[in-house]
Length: 293
Image: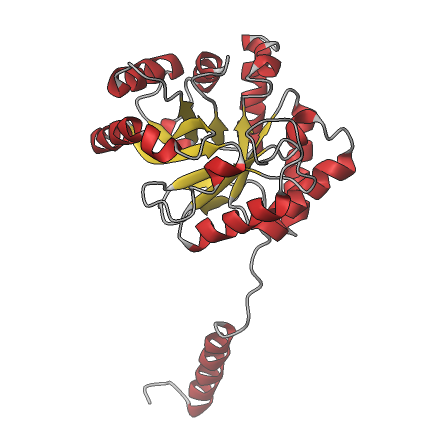
């Protein structure tokens, strides 16, 4: 056998068999974390589970930090692995966020914003203004902001068409809506235009959806969860906000419970939390990691 003995053959065979069997051993899945990339429904867009929100009290909280401190905070979150950032035309923060993200590779993070669907405005002109203010060539997600009536789908048709046109130009990649109040939320299940829905969520119903949008009453948690599960089954991506009750959850226990409820009971894809300090970033990451454990 050209110096290749039967003993060598048997040794090689046993080793090969051992290596082959290793491939059949069960491999434990890595634990899910806040900074994992997840796909939003059938959209194909991947974002980190935790998003950096810049709309606390319409952005006044973040604005009060000043540009230098806000930039440090955004970069801290980025270095911790948060690569999904959220703002809105109506907030005080789009320009600040654009400045804070300047210089970072654009394909290393996702940027979501929301457009005010007022009348008498050319959507394409508005989108160009928003891109300029945010110092970006495109938005990963554009939401119709603060949809709060039962007829919002028909009332925003011109804006929907405008987003479709912008998607063709690739200045907007994915589309959706931010809804407030049960009359508006009830229009989301079955909607064929929406790729992403932003839905408020926590375990206590604080600043969540009730019969009248933003009336100060506790939201109907059970109905909101029902609609989240419906749209998830339809392939829609779900991003949640108000996980700290719009800042009213002053105890760590409530903030952790809200995070656990959102992921374990409602089954959301990801959540946005507004930050004003590195400690809040760290806590949100820890809370989400615990919720996913």
